[in-house]
Length: 319
Image 1: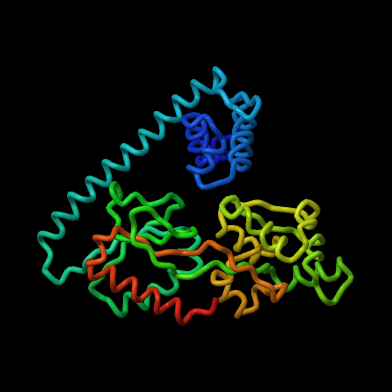
Image 2: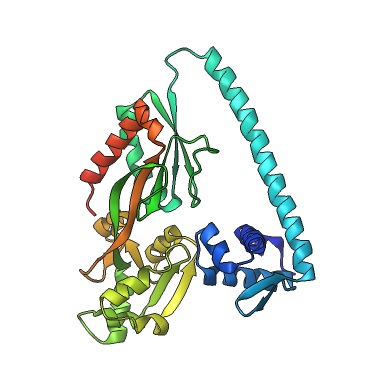
């Protein structure tokens, strides 16, 4: 067996989901990845562990003897991690209560926000200093997660989520839709032009490049290529797959290939020349980013301030 350093710990969560739900499809929905990504992650883990976890037959799965024992240990390990986290969280709450009791009334108020990792790193964080400057008495507690926020169990004031809307039981407001464009470094663009022997790139020219994919945005390339009558590129072009859109964009910046990226995420790189848009054509996705929170939080003054500030940022941002 390889070193434990080579094991992706997210794969353990995927195995636990698949075993509990008895389905790669349902496990994918729970973990926000595709069924094929679930299958690939589990297959790779089986190769690393050198034993089979699941039997696969007629689109159904069952645990092997070794798999049953392994899943029991995974569940125990994940429970131990959760328990440790809760203990630290409770300890932190106790310390916070004591802290608030002894500090003056001018102590900053905490606003707890849950956001998607790529949205945080590629769009939000660079803008946060302006909010801090305008609201010095509001302290932000920002956490990132791909999982949907459960406001009944999570001490969170608001969240920013990706989807088509209709977040059950929550107030929601669309920040902006996703506009997808293929981007790469100028050097990669020149190499694709050279391989295609053309000065004017066509979507079909992408067959000469490397397409960068993400497990969390699996349909983006297919959707863009379909809109541009170039679906034949998908099975022919070389490919690299990452487990997040954030790494996909970073891969494009590093010169690994072409990413189909949300235009709002790469504005700085397009402006400074690190990335270039290969085509003028962009695909407006039906999905977008929404600010969501329980309706009763609408009376929370700090939430209202943060929401208004967010939409000021959207209004002044090119997308």
